[in-house]
Amino acid sequence: MKIKRWMAQFFFLALQNPFLQNFFTGTIYRGSSKAVCVPSLHCYSCPSMPFSCPIGTIQFIFDYAKMLPYYALGMIIGVGAIFGSGTCAYFCPFGFLQELLYKISPFKSRQTLPHIFRHTKWLILGIFVILLPLWQHIPAFCAYICPAGTLEAGIPILLANPGYRDSAGLTFVWKMIFLISLILYVMREERAFCRYLCPLGLLLGLFNRVSLLQITLHRHSCKSCNVCGRSCPMGLNLPEEINAIDCIKCGECVKACKFSAVTRSLKIISVETKNDFFLK
Amino acid sequence: MGREGILRGIILVILLFIAAIFIYKGIFIPIDDFGTKEINLVKTNGNTFCQSCMGLYK
Image: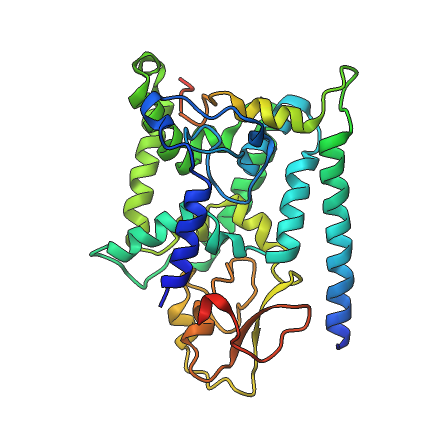
């Protein structure tokens, strides 16, 4: 089942959180690795996080320097060109959390929001990540939306630092309401944040069609049984939407297909094989 | 390798080249007269509590 991928996700979760003791002191890591952006929605104010979040970095550079955030974009383009949004499936701790919540949920559902809601990500990217930081000097995605920041930074730092609690106003109340609502909804619809709201997944997904990591449909083997579609954690209409912007290349469709009609490979031209470590 | 594969290969090389230039620019090229580089800003930003991350905007 998903055990190999969950092991990989747990490994990367541990890799991105080596300073767990900082949760008790309410401080954050300040070493040189903070200059490294990693392709996951993991708040740089999270006490245990040694790296930086690319979406936070993009907003900060737009806000502070009024210039194109070359460094963060370079990382996103480089990672996207190789893996597409495959890092969402393996590297992002918030994606992992959503999968675990859905796994234990007593009220999961196969019903999804209408497809048009998937375009909300474009609005989030355009308005909250680009326009508001540029024109209003507000890192608006972090300030008003990012549930990872609330969960990983806001709550633990306020818990460990009583002095900050007086500063928590209506915005924090809004962020808590949003976080709780999202958690409840994620238990109903798998990876709902990734499906409808995540700007990082959108940016990485732009490279899905050309990235080295490709999911390939072999139409001559496809029986149109739709097993792949039912296995997709992103609720995509498979096999038509293989490698679409919303595809996270997790390989669940590859595992689900009994006819080897769907394969995944790290090659420019996909070959007909299931020789993939995470699928064995 | 078919035509689609060649095209994808060319696009990939271009993308990786752009990524390398962007990352090089972010790490080595100063953005102001004080010699500040973009990566310095990233590190500074990552070194401080971000009030917005904590929802501390009133």
